Image 1 (cartoon, rainbow, N blue to C red):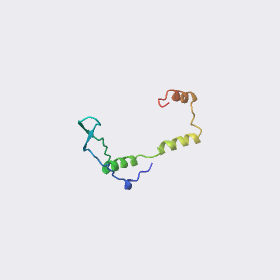
Image 2 (tube, one colour):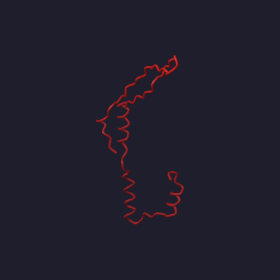
Image 3 (spheres, rainbow, N blue to C red):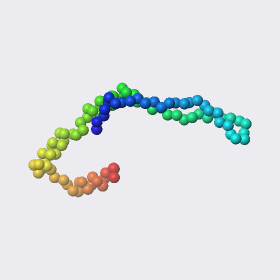
Image 4 (cartoon, one colour):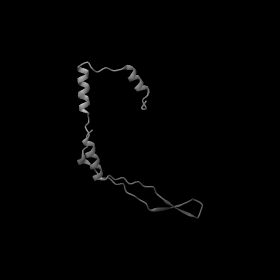
Amino acid sequence: MKIDVNSLTVSTLPADTAAKKVTSGGTTGTQSVTQDTTTFHSDALSVQSLTSEAMKSPEVRQGQVDVLRQSVKSGEYHVDASKTADAIVNSKDV
């Protein structure tokens, strides 16, 4: 995953919190109704901090990959079918 920290933008949606008067067709009373609004903004410092933390972790655990590659090449890596089946059955992701 690649994150371009130079293209971070801060965006704010306009907030309109003014009360509006609503009248009902045959009645003489009025109601005050407020409009729901949402504001979104990103704190550039926070985003930059999270980005630098994410960039510290390696994409691939190269040490584990090398160990597994060597054991496969040497014929020492064996898969136990029953353990694999148990792991699939007991998996919470399924």
